[in-house]
Length: 338
Image (cartoon, helix red, strand yellow):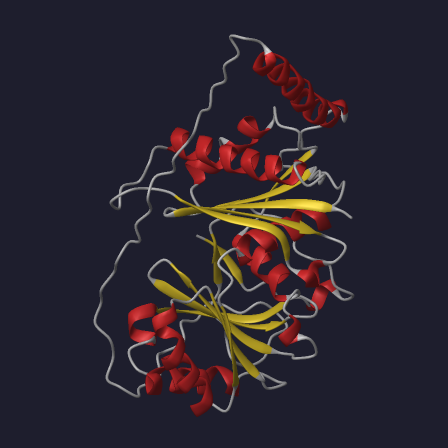
């Protein structure tokens, strides 16, 4: 087994997932979602970074109780001020390697673990990104993004006919034609309208409701990078003796506690932690006339591409080296820095 831990920090929650990188199709071994933030407030960078490190420590302790030892952690964090503090906070931990993972790579890694997508290619996958929705044409088996477009979420999901007309435009620009529409981390109330839009566009529909899917993807990305060292990524070598100490020390404490309990004046103390309760932000905008396809925002194309000019993905996370293909000259990276 190659245990790897993924941690995803969002404004309203912190998610962790422990996976076996050798058997990713089995999903997570252990996962947890911690609420974060209260009444729509945005905690400070220091407090948020400490909460992220604490979530990683809790997940590691849970793994140790099952004799599992994750030595690699993949961290996905959209807030730059928090992300900058992560390497220092995790440098004193038992992790041998700390990888900063961007959201796109985490999503692509997770899609490769979905059994229902085995042999289905290409697909149209969409997910929320702030007040926008990203729709990308993806080959799940290779993790290649052919094109990606952004739309105002309220306008796109105004009604199923508007969504269906937009999907028709996207399907028309793809060769081969996508076979399925995949919803990632979309709210439950949007499930039925999205399914109706997919049916109108002649696509199958898959709703991925796993709330820790990004943490699973981050863990798999960190494991896949192995021992590669790249500029800008924090790598903290740790003596493996720490793992022995992490196991032996609790045993010594248990024995000490037992001796104290057997003594006439034995006592013990227990401390607890309670997380803050999270709250989601709300946005509101007006939509287009029902049934009208949303326009595709365009950017100068990268060569070679199909005649349709794709919009680009915004990557708010740190830059990472893109996956290498057999023909680098023909690769098209549809992403922009935002």
